[in-house]
Each structure stands twice: as C-alpha cells, then as structure tokens.
Image 1 (cartoon, helix red, strand yellow):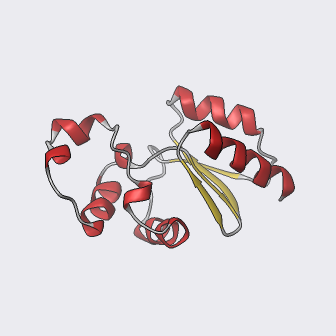
Image 2 (spheres, helix red, strand yellow):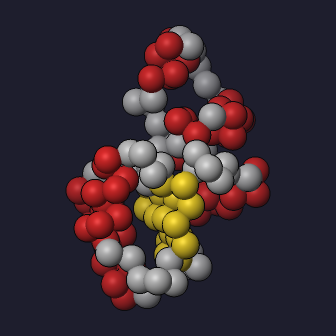
Length: 118
C-alpha cells in the first residue's frame, strides 16, 4: 500500500506532495473531505509506535483548549485525532509497512526515497 494522508488546503502538504511526485498508484486522502477511520488511526499507531507520534502539538486547538497544560494519555491522543483532523501531524506517508509522519526535512527525504523505491 502506498498512501499519503494530507490536508488539501495545507500549503506545506501541497509542497511535500509535489516534491515527492507520487506515482499514479499512490492513494491521496484529504482528511478534511475523507475523515480518518478508527481502523486507519489504529493501523498508523501500530506502524509508528504511539498515538502521540501522530499527534500535532502545533494545532491551534491544542492551545485553545488548554490541552498543552494537561497530561494526555495515549487514548486521549487517539480520541483527539479521531475527533478533529487538525490534531493529526501532517502529512502521513505510508509505503508498505513504513510510515513517515510530519514535515521535517529528514522525514520527507526518507519518504521520498521510500516512494521512489516502491
């Protein structure tokens, strides 16, 4: 499976997708128009190791709700990601059993390499 989970209105996601230039067999999922399912979030957690690794602490709602002042459990991270797309660290790029989360240069470079080899 090759998939990029992104937000179509996010300039950073758009830039990364254009850098990777995914082939036609890569599934693009816009999380605003096609929300994540619980099964997808659980599968991503299995690949990444934790729900926290999938969670964006940069989301505006994170501070607005005062979540930055709370001690959140893995279950909290999971429920927040399922509740609102803004809590997912984007983009999430999946190549077979490898997952690449976020937009750091290192992550994007590793994802681009994995997509080019797959």
